Length: 79
Image (tube, rainbow, N blue to C red; front, side, top):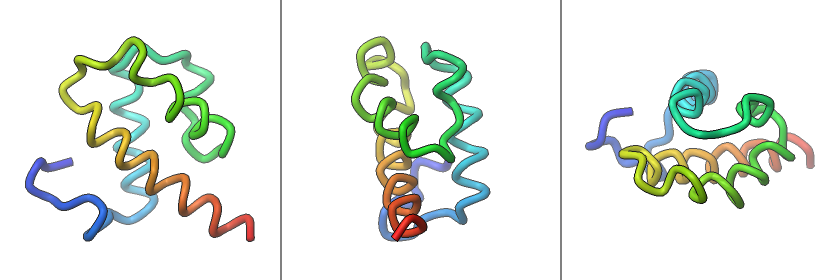
């Protein structure tokens, strides 16, 4: 994701966001079974735990913002 793209005001389409998140999560220290960002329990786990071992990753802030957006989209679907 380009740094100059405002994530929350101009979100990328969901399939692109999922692919981008998945690719970045593979480059982080995350259990492989938590990388499926289409499951609410994985999003919740990642939001709680991803910074423990990835706080110095160059894209951590963007990943966290995208995870929050993904969580909102999954909540909307379940209502």
